Image 1: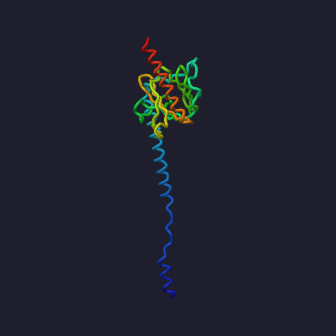
Image 2: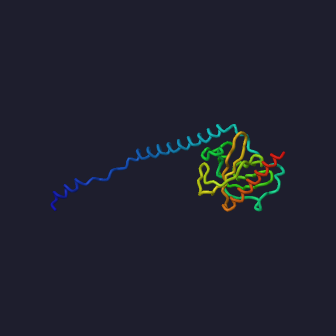
Image 3: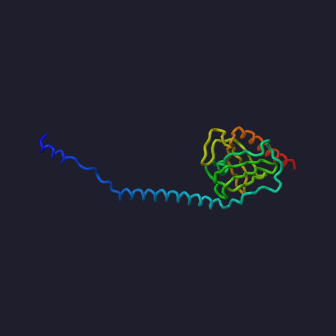
Length: 194
């Protein structure tokens, strides 16, 4: 090649574009602000939902004499997945901490269902408030295989609520459904005889 050809080849080559750091930083700051706005709106929506559900009374606590435990295994360890309006599995209840997922220890006694949640508000469902127990596949924010969720329907104030639980040992669910429903049936027949 002649020196003239080398000059033309050198002229055709371009250096790499220099990164525009100001534009990149601007995009990153904009994206971070957008994500922060989305999280803030989600938090405000959660608080607003709690305000709308402000008519729910305070959660009942365990009585001084809870009675004897009904099941051979006194408690069931697992997860609390939340509570919804009964029959509306996507209408999450967040008032009084009922929307907070957590570990759970359930104990069923003659007095009712004791729900102990480490790191969240514990509550007690009196036997008179229990309406039904069933196996289901989902509740707001959690979908499992068919029958993978123990759902307990109970009355709280003027509302019926569904609370979803999943045992660490899913085989326990059937026993819990049978015992809770038989307790409800026995209570309703005793009330009808009086």
